[in-house]
Length: 340
Image 1 (cartoon, rainbow, N blue to C red):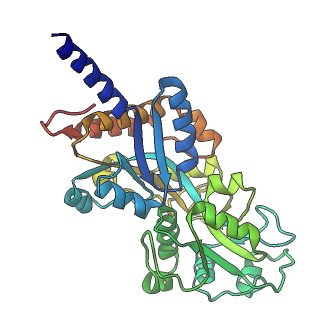
Image 2 (image 1 turned 90 degrees about the horizontal axis):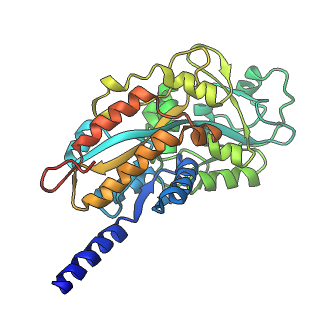
């Protein structure tokens, strides 16, 4: 009897210990806020979250292979692909890609770009900073005859997906020659791993231009460019312009929560906005781990808005959080019971 009781007690402790730390991998775009949430959550609950910031492509691979409790991707998976892999997805946070540059004498906000110009730079057609296409948008700027050093991601990346999805919408030539995805065949430039790698290259190379998630630009004090939006206005990336882009998003009508936020209407809308998604298996072999993941994100949705805003992310609106909560009912253990 005593042995049986001890075995039961140890079994409970083993179960709690197994679920004490949850694991995730994927997008670098939301890493700053996930790290901040995880730190606050552990201080409050004692439960840690080990997140590998390896890029959206890696996150999709790891969750598909069931080597982590959740995957994260800034490229939402299409409904048919979710069904094929037995996955569900939900948006966790919204933010934006920004063009960043390192050009001597130019600070943040001093240069203006259009989507067409950014596509031509990344196609290798615009090679100099004083090119007429740049000069036309920046008539008062004393642009140098310096070469443009293009920096892009070297790894599979949701940040890249948002960027090239936008370029595909703005440039028929880009759409035809390069297209979109978490990874593409870049016509020119040097690749950096993660938002961290792109940030580092841009900081090191005079004349560089790159794209990163806004929190990385802010943390690394990189100069960011104004971009012309769908309504014809040049806007700077910030919490207000991200919110403007997210304002018209209709998640309720998006099958499998598949929704892309680039080039949204609105006079103050940031045109290169996007959401970051969490991927989980619908049938869970480790139900306790899945429950802990959902408890973590439930806590984040209820307690993490200010932390997100402080890092210039856009928290998910309350109606969307309710939709997400309803979608969680699809995550079940092997007996068919909802895990949360």
